Length: 86
Image (cartoon, rainbow, N blue to C red):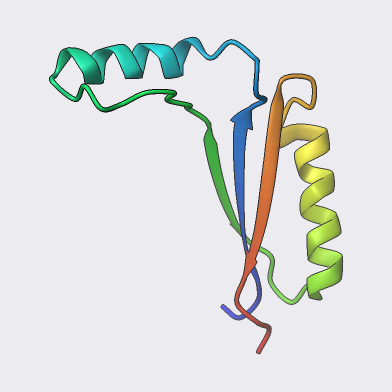
């Protein structure tokens, strides 16, 4: 199906407690991966946007993030649009 693919990365804001990231970091260290530090665990969302123009798609995906996909108080998000219509 032609169109744009949106990739959304949601991560805790800097300075926000990330207990899941801390648990993963401690577990990796316990398994012998001593070089690991500052682990952050987030969410990855991927969606196809069909025949939406790039500018519209970017704005719409940002609206989706602000309304549902990310909690703006404690999370940051980054959007990537991949592919071209056609």
